[in-house]
Image 1 (tube, helix red, strand yellow):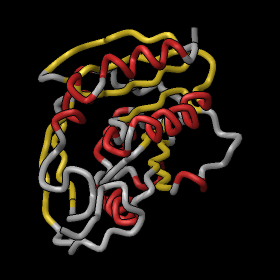
Image 2 (cartoon, helix red, strand yellow):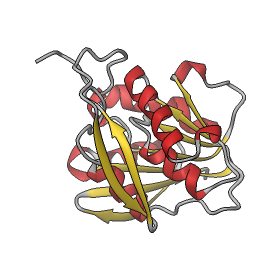
Image 3 (cartoon, rainbow, N blue to C red):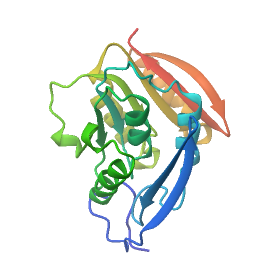
Image 4 (cartoon, helix red, strand yellow):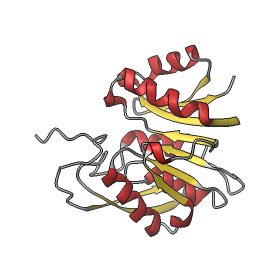
Length: 202
């Protein structure tokens, strides 16, 4: 055991590149992944549910959009593909994940509109019309709450945040906490033990 987690800033795990293939909204994607990032061997089930069940942006979506905890970039690249007029910010603390997202954005033909960034490097004035995340539940409840309290207030008026959380990892309790913080939360869908939450300003 190395002590690495997918939320490590500089993973020491051997990189061991691999290829991952998946389809979303009738489009096929082929991405590079590597050890030391989230769900390195396959598209995570929660991410798959989120991309299948949430309302993907349409071609008229102006953005900017935000992917919190982008990993190797599946959500960010799908959003940029579906919303060709929008800029997508792909944010992750993990440097290897950010490097892979750059590679995968190039492979997907959306590199000019995917801005890969460490959390502290996103300009403070940017407000997002949509926020998407399969949030890092395993960082702990307090840290997760801190992360969401940092980013959700940057949702533009009339904007929507889409979150996916496993029910057994606290999906329902997270929804309650968000309501307590003053957000409107709708359980948009449930599949394979995951909750897809639609979060908006009240």
